[in-house]
Amino acid sequence: MQLIVPIRNIYMNKKIYFHEDDYCMIEILPADNYEFCEDRATQAKSFSEKHRAENGFGWTDMFLLKAEPKPLKDLQISVIAFENALSQIMERTDVIYTGYSDYEEKCEHTMAFFKDNFHVFYESENGIIEKIWFHIDIVTVEEKAFATTLLRAISQISDLILVDNYKNQVLPLNEEQAINDYLHYIYVDRNIVLNQGSSLWGKWGRVDKGEKAYLIICFTNSDLIEITGKGIKYRSFAGNTSFIDFENCAENYFTEIKEGTKKCVGERDIAAEQPFIEFCTLPVKTRMLFVNTSTGLFKKWRNNAQKQFQNIYQKIIEAGFTTFDLS
Image 1 (cartoon, rainbow, N blue to C red):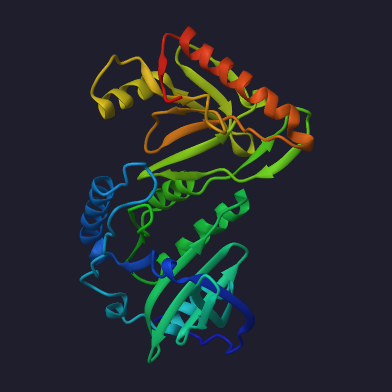
Image 2: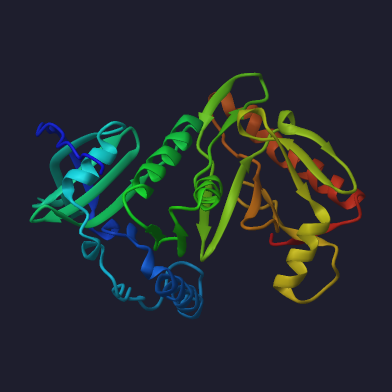
């Protein structure tokens, strides 16, 4: 029998705020809800496509999330068990506020564990956990590793799933690969290396346009290892080598568009504020972003952005492939 020892009844006075729209949007639920949440995510995607505004910005109607058939409180997870699971890796506070714009109010029966850019909120009643939801913002590779540790710790409490209602993703917390894929493709960071040899930590990762998710690469010539007839080999975050396979991208793009030849690997837009080439990789597309900025240290980088775009684009053509022009 496992002995559960209550942790000290000491709370930090740190105030944590969450916008009311973020309430339970990334949440933990019983695994019995997996099929229901998968179906709900599919419905949400379809609804979003149907009700997108003609100008591409926003929607004409709102999708209401139906409540899951088995609420978290049915698992009878004790507050003591939950707090013991996280107390060794995070601090906690009971000073929780929510609201919108300039309005805010204190949340009763709500607490949170926190560490850097991670907030794990939880509600309880009579010593039983009723809700668990997240705010996660990964900026460094160390935080990505911590996110894995955090989800692994929560997975030990019961048979649970993580439901990201923003991205319509559902993953079992007992599947290590599912956790790794979620963190890798949805929250990724890298170091931007500038032309003059200076470095700046810049965030890259998932960016949404409609229901599409993109893996962003803020690309410089120093990142490029080689381009061959088979694809692009480049240096990713932490110096690892990644590869974009042209044949796979062309096949994926043809499957999605269902027209043209099987030589189109994605889309491009040199006229965008930040020129990009987007490759049709899976499970998410890879958008190669050529950063445009115009002041101080970055002036030379701005002038080179379109040149770098043209260089990569020409190499794609020489390899026998093309991209669809959005400009």
